[in-house]
Image (cartoon, rainbow, N blue to C red; front, side, top):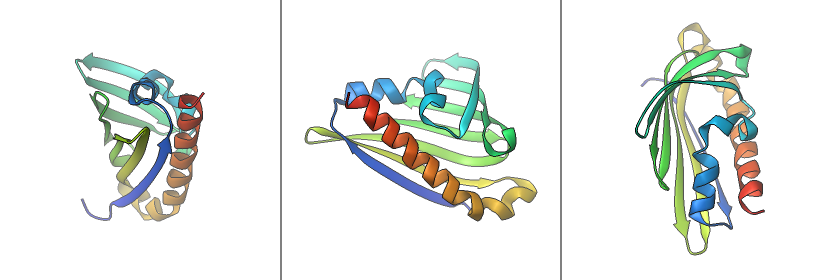
Length: 141
């Protein structure tokens, strides 16, 4: 897609991949770590695929997401409708005795809001860094 903004944030966590996966795959608790996500409403679940509506902090906007869980490997959240268009992918990689937790955004704001994508990039990056630190803290307890 044109004018997509890529954001990459990663952190190393001294915990088992099972423990980190338990935290990141508990999608109903996403608001606990991801402060940019205010509310979650699950619409349907089919195996490892979840369709949901989330309310994000940016102007209390609602976004429709298709989320696919790849156990202990990654979570792909595809923003299919709303102010954000694109994907947020969370990857887990076991490196020695640590888990490398990576979040990759490939997104833009839709419609006329597209011109503000660059401005919100910093907010998304900061929010992602905060989320990964909170997940790390929880996993290393």
